Image (cartoon, rainbow, N blue to C red; front, side):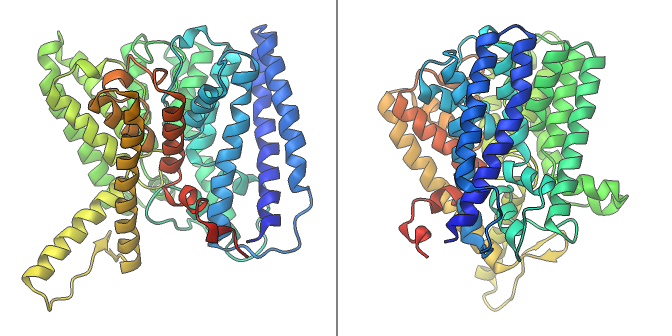
Length: 481
């Protein structure tokens, strides 16, 4: 294990986190929230002090393998969360540190689950910071660092980090160099965020609300600045968020192909077709199911497609209390929680690509039963999927189900309903935010015990990092040279 390079990367990340807190200081002082600005300033000093542990000089020993990539990604997400929670705690706005940790882990992992009862009572600086944590965590903390800093020295350095942090069964390069790929991804990400922000402002949304909403939508996080989330905004603003949530749930490789004008290759993508098909189909079914509860078709359609886009992309914004919808609609939403968005997007969940591969592999298994001597291959977009990828997928699903079961069992000690426990774990493990029951759109996670909040916080980190980077920290063999 190359501890020197890991400490070096951790030091760089802490310095970047300190820089990213500076706008929150300015926002706090602009709104004359002096105690909040001072809390951020103290946290920045602590971050800069802690960053010295890694040193500023790049280590001479550059050996960096997949194990180091997994470890450094997991440690970075844990460390930035531990420090990111401090402004909430130091300011006294969230008096219990575990609650503050839950809130910021939910922010960085783009989950959107909250323990706050009255969001509008929070200082503007904190509201900005929790929304910005969505934006930073959406594409990945280390992916951002790869895009702006020439740290990569040595073969595979950048690829190991990006594979460990980026969502999806496969991660490839868009450009010859991994740093160029990270730069392209973040350029698309920034461009779409700015476009949505401009459209929200032009649509009449207040400036501060537009900034936080754009951050929450881009990162598919869902932290709102209003107690009713998005319900109080005008219908055209809700449609804006609906569309952009769907866009940020698309694999960013598709946007790159569109920039290159490879339209046929982009629109023939199997995952894109399945993603849009599921979203449109689910929205249409829910619209018909909830129509008797609404006065007009347009209102029912708006709420249905908003919630489908929000849940499937694991954003977590809400315009209605879908806890009160018929069982058919609620069941569809729970299934969409599991499916999630596309691989290579900022959304969570199992991912549509994995679902397609599972279906294709199941079909191959049935065909082999019928014709044992026939060789069947799994193909995606015309290319053969290697057996190693299929095996990794099977392992992923097995571990996913095991974590889901254990987590439900652990939080059941709080004695909430099965509906609440199941959807709470699904909401955190799939980085969605709201669930059903006590954790529905009008509820929150404040009623859970300290132990359950720690379990659910771990679920959020495990879900955002696609399970294995977090689990590998628990194996003693990981830390051997």
